[in-house]
Each structure stands twice: as structure tokens, then as C-alpha cells.
Image (tube, rainbow, N blue to C red; front, side):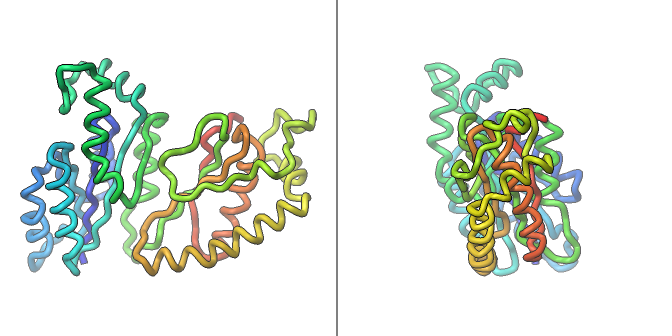
Length: 283
């Protein structure tokens, strides 16, 4: 069985950097592969004696319908497991990156750079809709992107298990765009209003005690565990390889951090190890 990873996304969002990280992890990477050559690469990977069992293909943003058609054909091949990674970033970040690099945008038109970015985003939305994993690189540097790629795509000789990512965030800083499920825990008691706890974080034992001693917090975690016990095997049965779950509170410093920390332990008990991160935590 060969594993193919298609790297798609907005120009300037980090496709080439993701490819470099995958190459470091031992993937066979082809950057800027012309769409018509995808079947040829698949043929070579499946040839007798081929050592190319993990192949990452970086596709461009031109002719996205043709690219999608080739991916669909690839997904029909029973000897190949195919996933799509989609990289994105907000418009302001993309504009800044292009202005700093002084590169020409592939969708450059008579209008502004922003119009080119929007036109490309609309054109490749078909690829975004088919993605198994989406990473928003707006607030990530090269090293942080590399860490995310390693967490998701490090080669596992014992066999691949569904990769689960947990992230806490604050609603006042905006919803994360690269997650599958979002839960709101703003109904829990807020340590912000306790003077002694305000400057601490949800990783602090006193803050945890304040939040988790409330009966509704325990009931929430119990119900969330039951929900995940139902969903995770069903996702795996459907062939989902990656799942990201975000827990939000107001500022992303107290309640969501505690719940994500607890949820990481719960998932470990269920034999679904997860990687936790705290987007808006400022310790």
C-alpha cells in the first residue's frame, strides 16, 4: 500500500515549506508537479520493488478542476491511500508576504494584489472542500509549520492511527479556521473574575480546581467523552485520518485551556493519543 499526500492551497500560504518538512521526514516529495503527471507518479510508486511508499505531491493553483479530477482518479486506486493537505492564510498575511518577497502572484490580473488573492481563493475552493487537513499558517512561522507537519505526517512503521489535534482558543480573537469541530465552554465559571486567578492560566492547579470543581464542568467532560467514544471509531471506519477539535472560551486563557488539558488525558485513556496546543495562551 502506497500513501499519497496532495499538498494544495493558496499561493504564499507555505506549500513549499510544508514540502521541505515532509522531505525531512522521509517522504518522497515532488514540488510543482504538473497535474497530468500524477497518474505516472502513481504508476511508478506501485511498480514492483518501488521504495516510494510515501509520496507527497505539491500541486499548483492553475486548473483546479483538472487537479481535482486527477485526485479523484487517484482515490479510486485500491493500492493507494490518498489524503489532501490544504494550506491557507488570511488575506492581510498573504499580501504582506507577497509585498516582502516581491514575487508575482500566479493569478495576477489588472486589478490589485488583493483581487488576485481573492480570485485564486475562489478558484481553488474545490480543493479546499475536499481537504482532509487544513492548516492556517497566518500566525505560524516556518519552524511552527514544520512542527505541525511532523505531528501530522511523521512516518509510523507500526501503522497509521488517526491523528488528533486539540486546540484551545478565545472567541474574542476569532474562530480557528483549520479545525473540524468547535465546542464552546463559555458557560463554565470564569476565573477571570477572581482576582487571585485572573493572571494565572488554565494550566495552573488553582485555576483547574476552580473550574473543574463545578458540577457542570464534570458533566460537560463526561458527555464530551461519551460523544468522542461514539464519533472517533465512526470517523476511523469512514477512513478519516486526521481530526482537529477546538475548545473556546472568551479569551483563551483559562477555561478552554483547562478543558483541552483534561481532554488530552481523557483521549489517552480511550487509546486515542492527541496533540494539544493553546492558540491564545500567553503565560
